[in-house]
Length: 465
Ligand SMILES: [Zn+2]
Image (cartoon, rainbow, N blue to C red; front, side, top):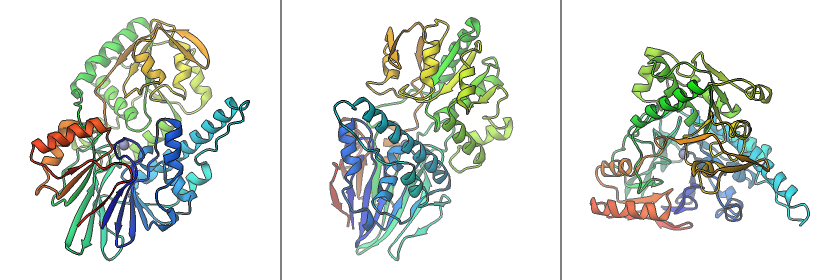
């Protein structure tokens, strides 16, 4: 029995781990590498294994760095099952269609600006491959054992990261006895707004665990409401617009829940809230259909029971058409606009920024991580001028940040999870983390008595007893 690490090993994208049991090959996640163009294209295009020789794929959740490589597998001839939870199946179809659209758009744009020097690129995949991959998805409920062959079975356990997200627990009949392998995928926090926190499973022999925030702590969720209250009060007083660049999956729904709660409790007045992102609207529909899901916390379910659907506030308007999106330009504030993309690199948020960034009554509220080099990061760092669609705009709007939201376990959550495993695993593999952060986490684990901790590099293979 062997495990190979072919992505998210010393980095945070391209999650791909290959379990080989007597030649039966199971791929855990098939994510897309993101980041610097040249390097990520290389890793995405060149598969380190033959797609046709895989026997099964199991997905942890629907984020693109965990499922976005599936169309490439399909393109290379993989036609076997892709197991996932029911909600992940619904979300993955949407995420892959969107990813294909972005790939095609990116390639067109690249080829247009390089027309003179003759450089061209092909999209990584298009709509046809995304559809082919979506057709391979096999949805399963949480907790039910699924038999892969006479030696391997697995089940999905709640990971508490995003709706539908799962840990994958595999049981393998190895020559030296039964072995339990758990891959956490992305792991949620112990304190969350919507999700049910993950429960550390028992009797784990081998653990593959993410380490994104291996050396960082999140701020408390209690910090969210005072910031929102201040921003809303100002917008109401100055009849301004609050622009929130937001990720379509989870962050938008978390914010809607916070607004619902604050309006019901009269902490803030009821003001128009526009969800101006077709993907966020579709994903919120999926949340609505699965409000009874095992992914959600008891507290969130109680809220739904007592107060009703948090995504059905009277003041929330879901905007799908570009025409309706444009009408927001002429409407006076106060209002809140939630729009993608989360780092202001594309999408409708750019139009709202272009129309409102020069007004001092506008607030841009950052609620997610803003990567180096993005427009969101420049705004967050206090840029006085920005360029949108090639035109320069002075920044008169206020930019505020809420650092609290994160769907990932932080350092203390990860330590809690691993030190709760009884007995201690034979081996822990830290994946899905930058080298410095996971090295610090490994040191901390060592100090806590967990000595068998590995930090695999891309391409490493390890024999499991
Ligand atoms: Zn994720």
